[in-house]
Length: 267
Image (cartoon, rainbow, N blue to C red; front, side, top):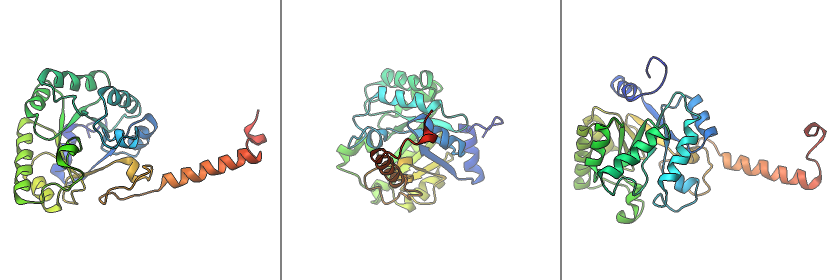
């Protein structure tokens, strides 16, 4: 953190150097963002995972720039301490350097994000242009959800030596252009350790074992609010979905029975 208590790219680098682990969670609305920020999470990610957990899509591909801007603005209002990073959605940066730069700039100028996250290394020139313009960029390697149709499903990445070598080379290439951190998703723990040790910047894992400099999860998975099976790498710390169902069922029963509203709920 800096002197004002805000998490910055510099404080994240300092955390890696000191061995302090970094926490990162997703938020898509004001109240969730406020709860996470008040809990002192380091990074809040407005993930394009909102396509799955908020909008009900099968994957992240249908998510638009307007979807991401809308939710980032809401999250921004709840964040005063954590660093706010946003996923650049599918086809927001793949159509050329100027389009990519202007899309990234919208997240910073219009929505108040402090960094953008981009999957893969196929658009490294566009990423470098963003960094040159002063926009912090977080990388994302391993399993990359925006490439799910090309990959052919949800699979662990880097299991063969050739795949592992490619991920390590890509990580080094991204670090060289100046990304401030890297997310590694669904890779073997041994590979994650190798990448983490090879880079000077923080490496944040999701399904990548305990050797990374930090960990990220989708908050809806963590607290049991996503109504579908969660991946193996998720640890569910609470089951708020069950509690909500119980509360709603009780409300319905009290309405039907005339118990609610009572005198204490009336004027």
